[in-house]
Amino acid sequence: MKLINPTTLEGWLQPHSIQWYKQLSELQGKYIYPWSSTLTEPNGESIFDQEVAQIIADKKVLDVGCGHGAFTHQCSLLAKEIVGFDVTDNFIKTGVENKKSNVSFVAGDSKHGLPFKADEFDCAYIRKGPTSAYLYLKKVVKKNGKIVGLHPGDESGKELSLLFPNLFDYSQGTPILDTLNQRLNESDFAYSKIDVINSIEYIHSPLDILKLRCFGQHPAIYELLKEKNVDELTTIFEQNATADGLSITFSRYIVRATV
Image: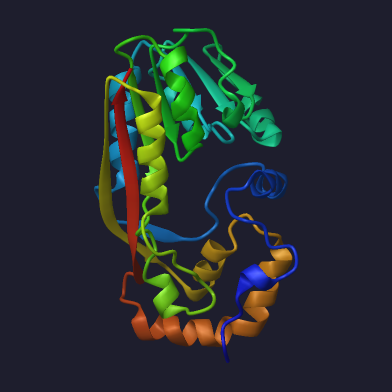
């Protein structure tokens, strides 16, 4: 049976759109991946987390695109003060729960700027958050302040569209990298560089493939795909998986910049 293209189903939302984030926050309350997988080490996310820990010690820090604030709270153990900024009100409400004295949260859309004073922060990071924020960080981060960004790589999961045609699509070219380069060129930082970090992600089961594809979508979409395509999914998965799971590319871009 041909795999269903989920983007044709009623209620499908463009991933990472404002509406998608709003729905995810209403469904989960947190930005947490629902599928089960294992990442090889090192990977882009572990490298990024280590670098953030190095630049934020005893500093006033801006966390752009903080989601529900889990990483913000983690970083508060090192930072002097940290402010989480996100467009999704429900995520901000989750972040405020049980927050520490050196943590605060602000809701807003970085496409319209960052609502902070000039030179308010010693450093900033964007952990899978909006690239539009780069255009405004030079104003709110002090001169010589460090900025680190983590973004999905264009090659991430590139095998999925070949293994599961129609279920996944794979865009040609490097649209994410092109956007990052444009943002950094317009930001006029004293220094900026983008590195690509590729590793392997092992997806544990056929249903985890569906959970990955349906992340942030209405549960009815997942249930329909499961009902119609689980046998075909299982066959493809079992034909291609190893003992560790189905191997796909886990790609991340790391941005390093200085104001």
